[in-house]
Structure formats: structure tokens, C-alpha cells
Length: 240
Image 1 (cartoon, one colour):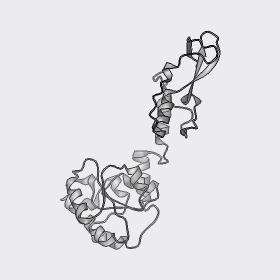
Image 2 (spheres, helix red, strand yellow):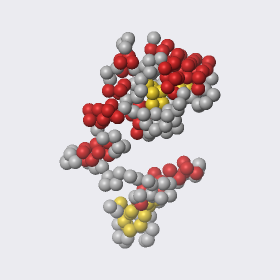
Image 3 (cartoon, rainbow, N blue to C red):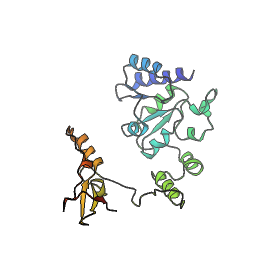
Image 4 (cartoon, rainbow, N blue to C red):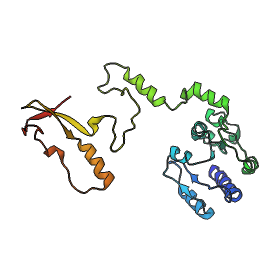
């Protein structure tokens, strides 16, 4: 029943808006895909089953969902979102009256026709229910500012003595192929055990990146380059 309801919504939207909008259908990874493949083939609209929410929303102007967390993501990206159906109350005859906090974020529509009437005038920007967002912030997510992972990592790093690796002081690394934040990514410092002088050895990982980026076929193995660059001795060690 739930699938038929969503199929009807997709058919109605395609019939009404296909001339004005580029419509893309996507499904949750756990959903059986074949019925959607058949429907989208019949309606001649694309079906995406691989792209993640981040990619999809960053290339969308509006979202129609069924009680998905993508509604919150759309709010953050200032994209209007609309709800039809509700995965949070499966089996309920009153899904449009959901008590789920996630299903309070977007405007809810009982029928495809009701949605069409509302959507005739396109909206821009977030249309999320501010009270629902505040409820989720206080009761589930915490501050929605894109830095939750950073805060969690800092809390974990403050558990002294429990971890051998700590969260880096600078969490923003904009390293590129030929410009890196940490020079050791490109060149590993070495010290000669004979003359005591410092030299550098090109990082195998960086060489691998270059080979991949430029489709190089030559096999470069820096681990075989073992002589000191100053005296030619082979007794070298890492310099920390």
C-alpha cells in the first residue's frame, strides 16, 4: 500500500511538472528497486540508486520525501522540502498525523493533488518548521552547524591516556596534489647514520598519488633508494 501511494505521487508529479522541472527519483538503499525501475522506465524519468544525500541535495532545488532526515539536510542547505507519506509510522492509517519529530519538519500533504496545488508557485529557501528544527536540535542532534563530528572528535581526544592517536590541532586540511599542509606527506625527513646530515626521501604514498593522477606506468620504488644524499652511505634512519 505504501509503495502504491508513492508511485501515485511520482506519476502525478511527472504528469504535472515534467515540462518545467528535471525530476529525479531516488530510493533508500534498503528499498526493493525493481518496481521503481519499471515505473521510472515507463514515465521516462531517471532513477538514482547510488548517489548519497549530500550529492543529491547539492544538485537539487526541491525535495519530496516521506519522513527522511534529508529534510533536515535540505533545511541546512536552504532547499524547500515537502513530505508525502511517512516511513516513521508504517502500517498506520493516519500517517499524515505523525508524532515523529522528523515528520514535523516539512509541510505534509495527504494527497498528490494537494501537493500539486501548493507547488504551483515554486518556493526558494528553507521552508522547515522552526519549532520542529529547534526540537530536534535540543532533543536529538545538538547544534546543527556542520561541526558535530569535529566536536565529537575533540571530546574523544580529551579522554587522556586512552588513545595513541589524537585529533589534529587543525581539522581543516586543504592539501592538493602539489601543495600540501604537511611537507612530510611529500618528503620524509631522513638522517644519515654515518655523516649525521639530514636529507629527504620522497613519500611512496605521494608518488602513488602522482602516478594515479597522471596515469603514469613507470614503477617507482623509493624504498630501494637507500643511500645518503650527502655521503652515499646506506646507514640511514627516520628523522622525527
